[in-house]
Amino acid sequence: MKTSNSYTYFFVTTMAIISALLLSILKVNLQGRQEFNKVLDTRKNVLKTVGVLKPGMSDSEVEELYTSKFTKQAVLGSDGTEREYYIYGLPERPEGYVLPVSGKGVWSTINGFIALEPDRSTIKGISFYDHAETPGLGGEIEKDFFARRFVGKKIFKDGELVSVTIAKSKLQEPSEYAVDGLSGASLTTGAINRFLRDDLTDYLPMLSDGDKKTSWR
Ligand SMILES: Cc1cc2nc3c(=O)[nH]c(=O)nc-3n(C[C@H](O)[C@H](O)[C@H](O)COP(=O)(O)O)c2cc1C
Image 1 (cartoon, protein in one colour):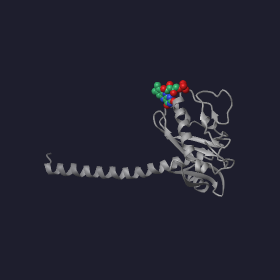
Image 2 (spheres, rainbow, N blue to C red):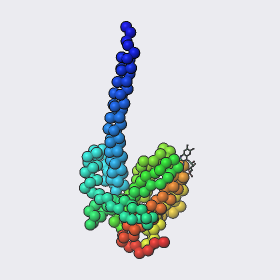
Image 3 (cartoon, helix red, strand yellow):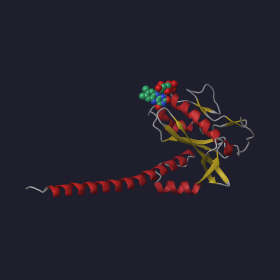
Image 4 (spheres, rainbow, N blue to C red):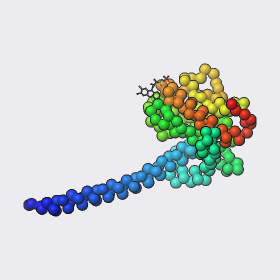
């Protein structure tokens, strides 16, 4: 059977329009979902950093805990830009602070959070996420065993911001201000040392409000 040219053109054009429409509807829907997932992932990492993210928590449980326990705040950083952070617990009686940190690693930008106790010096938790460092090498930074090394370390020494340093390998002697390194990942951990120190310096206007801090160099 022979179909006319005009029918073929009509059919092809109609199919093209329908496909384009379906694709754009799908894209708009997926974009919304992707943005939602990104926000949810950030919130999960905020919860994880203070140690309240439990395995198997549903999205709505994450949302509920985040909304009831965290307040977003902003401070004018010492670099002149507005810096956001989260208060954990009641703003008038905080149980901790969560500060976003980020910087370039070997292969990617590394995002993370550092949580501090109310003294704003003792580390409550740390997490690194959303990076493309090599699994098994730099990628080990996202593991819980690595995060646990930071808990209880301090970022202020005699009122001066010293940050926390990841050593190149195992520490020669115990330190309140340093953690053991990861083998095969010294470039990634060296990058973290730099951006942690820089970001914490930018947060000094809110960090220096804490107890026991008088000066810093
Ligand atoms: C394919 C490839 C991927 C690598 N990825 C990383 C990485 O993500 N982070 C890192 O610090 N080093 C990475 N390295 C290793 C560095 O080149 C370097 O050998 C290492 O940082 C030295 O670390 P170490 O002093 O702890 O042994 C990678 C090397 C190769 C060949």
